[in-house]
Image (cartoon, rainbow, N blue to C red; front, side, top):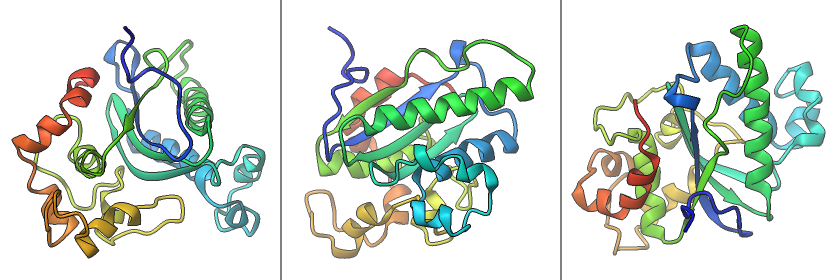
Length: 226
């Protein structure tokens, strides 16, 4: 039976943890510029078309992405870039939105990476993986897991440049990053089976064994190295 993380029957309105890593576990982000370029492509694909047309992005290259824009099809809730892999927490508003985004994103990035480093061939390990998020508890714990990175290490930098954590703390804002759906749980505490938590920050800093059990399948199947 194939891994549930590579089954591509993505549903409309579904939440997914999408991720991929470098072929042979090689690094895919060698410096800050690489990370910035990857996120720039995400911004071009997911920013509202009106922003691109009005010149908010102030990028001529961005105009060429108008026909490839997926802002109506995909919402980005959380993300984190690590040296040899990336994590995206996505909401799919139409069928096949995730497939479109990941193919366009990785293709554009590989073209940039290969040109910069004068290399040929694939950069990522096979096709991306995506796991359906089926419960509210899983959604919240997954966002924390992404921000703490795949190893579950608790030492986290508040102003990390290449994750969505600063957007959750209110230190950054962008139309293409949408943390509010998860943050709403901590404002209203409407689901007390997850916990009446005072803030998202305290939730992130309180990773425990129970949280790891909820995410056990994800942790085991990814097996991403730092």
